[in-house]
Image (cartoon, rainbow over all chains, first blue to last red; front, side, top):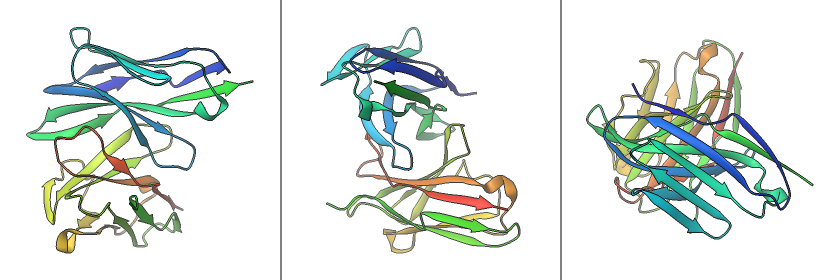
Length: 112
Length: 114
């Protein structure tokens, strides 16, 4: 089967750094994506890693280790507006089709 | 450029009734996807259109769900008859190319079946 595991909740304070981990078990792995969703809003794309290593985009970075079936999203200099749910999603080839498989999401609460 | 839009934003219906959800993708995006999120769980893939054709409908729960995309533009997802377990948030997403990692999501339709 295919599954993704990520923590259900993370709490941090403004200005801090937080890491949200994602482990996955899938077939035909192409890459790992991260999406952000504010309450009531649309999930929005943050990053995509197809190769091992760290990708940096401003305050956010994403890491992938294909050999460990593991990735993480790193958020630096946390701001209140970063409070949201963060989903990891694997692009995989499953059942003859190329599709995105999502995790259950990590709810990040940033406190003053 | 207008984003993905969905209608309605909320729907409350009784068990046994019918509901039709609509999605308007970003103009020019051939790929359209439907997803569902039941409270606290993963965003689960339902199906994928390429233009007007169903490319992959492996995630559709059962035959009470019918998706269409006539003319390859907007799409509808009909649930008939609705059951309690159909409650959740239904998201639509679109992308230009199937292989692109980025999908553009709509804000979702929150469906409550009572």
